Amino acid sequence: MSSQANGRPNPGARDEGLAQYLVEEFLEEYQEGRMTRRDALKRIAGIVGGLALAEGLLAACAPPATPAPTPQPTATTVPTKAPTAPPPPTVQPATPTAAVTPTAATTPAGTGGITVRADDPAIEASPVQFPGQGATILGYLARPKGNGPFPAVLVCHENRGLLEHIKDVTRRLAKAGYVGLAVDLLSRQGGIEKISDPAQVPGLLANSPQQQLVQDFKDGLTYLQGQPFVSKDRIGMVGFCFGGGVTWRCATQIPELKAAVPFYGPNPPLEDVPKIKAAVLAMYGELDTRITSGAAAIEDAMKQSNKTFDKIIYPQANHAFHNDTGQNYNAEAAKDAWAKTLAWFDKYLRS
Image (cartoon, rainbow, N blue to C red; front, side, top):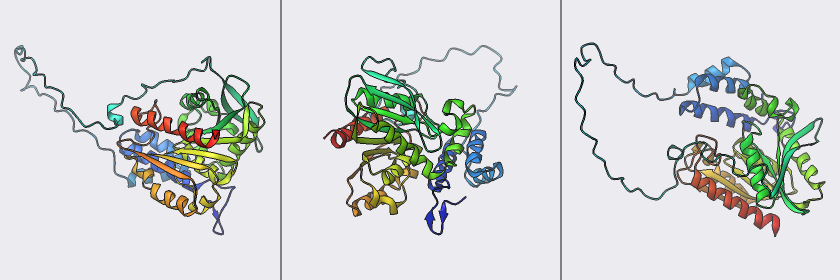
């Protein structure tokens, strides 16, 4: 399905750029051995509209590398007597390495866990609902305790939906003095908790009308502006992976945003860049070439339009390096990126 009509984007159709981004992500995860063929097929089929198309895409890409099988001893090689004990191994001193950001291979997944608890005494956090375009929109709100008013940040989840990690990110914002509102882009399906098969989530998101994705955040901004504890003219946005792409698109269509930080998100249509009002800080991982290769184009477009923009490319960091529950979590890069995110919001939402 094309999102173009007479050369112009069709707001009633899905965002083909985001859909293609998701397909490429799952193909990459399959090729790298981080996703089984069955899981890749289910996710891609939900995006492209059929299993046959998904099978064709997988067949066209190189299969994941598999290690050579370990030789098995035959009957003639089985020892007939108990082997003598081998000598103790020689302990080799650790070889010093250069101080670099650890890669996913050296950083165990899931070690970060929940960094700000929902019952943290400094914040208040709970699910919320607010009116949307033709639906009630579900979300998760975290705020500092006190009357405020506080600056606020909209949060967009990854292609897996509004999971606990994104709720934790929202609470981190509250702990830092911001009102955080994570919007559930599956609200029309009853929310992420109503989706029994996680493999369905990317297809549901990819096939959402492109304008709907942005509209849900416009409605989230309106909801925030109606809260007495929110500074109505000091609202930003942050998003991750698929949510980074949505954040870019919201920046082009929501002029009230003062600051935005898309984490490794696909570029918006470059012709929409002149409409951006927010100060944008874009986060990338050096190893995430599929996304980082587009950094130069968006930087040029932002500069040509005299927009406030900066980018950071973290050495030895891959896609989704900020997610401390995922395989690509990079503790050092994640910590630094979050500190710089807060500094960016401090500069453009507090001053």
